[in-house]
Amino acid sequence: MWNDRPIRQGLLIVISGPSGSGKTSVARALCQADASLAYSVSATTRPPRPNETDGVDYDFLPRSEFEDLIQRGGFLEWTKYGDYYYGTLKSTIESTIASGKDLLLEIDVKGAMQVKALSLKCIYIFILPLSFATLKTRLRSRNTESDSELQRRLLTAESEIACVKDYDYCVVNPDNGVEQAVEQIRHIITAERCRIDCSLLDWISQEFSIE
Ligand code: 5GP
Picture 1: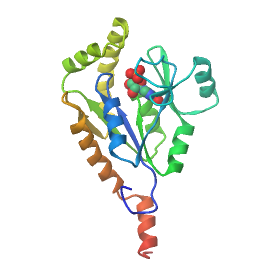
Picture 2: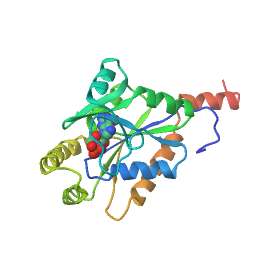
Picture 3: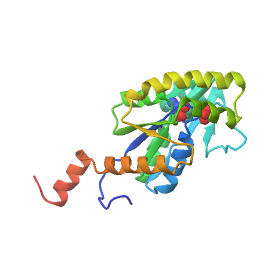
Picture 4: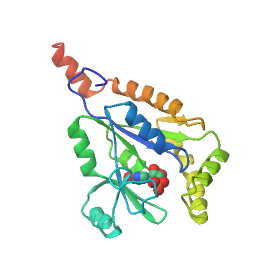
């Protein structure tokens, strides 16, 4: 475990960034590097890309089921991105908290602002590529979106980048692999896990008999 302290409140880590920033690769690599970190598998109505697996990359749901879950209050947050719904199921959060792990949510800016409104213990990290030109090249070379979807994602990227001011940290993900961004985020998470909060103070007062 990251720390021998037995009592602690789980941490939520929100990672956002424009499409093409490489945030999914960074988030996946982070969870592989840190056994105390779980990846929150989102639900979506978007069809799977050729390399994606149901239940691993997303829970791919029919639109009717997603809308039913919205009605029943099943989501911590949800958003409409383009033509599709995306959301974090409350059940995902609950099962991770029960497992004692911290949870990484890779969600868009609108979803992140919904989480922020809940005032949970959470850190907000924004991922950027080195330049807007890099972003365009990455999106084009990915070859998974139609031309119109690509244009829409570039427009959304501009408005998303303008929201960076609402985040706690900004990490640049350069083109030569995710290692640098992963290392920087691991440092951020380590610092946040040592932050003095109520659960840390409770543990200190119990362990060291301080009134
Ligand atoms: P993609 O279609 O490229 O997988 O995802 C499109 C956008 O939806 C990305 O910005 C991604 O971060 C965001 N996204 C994925 N899952 C969720 C989610 O559960 N909630 C929200 N709000 N956004 C999500």
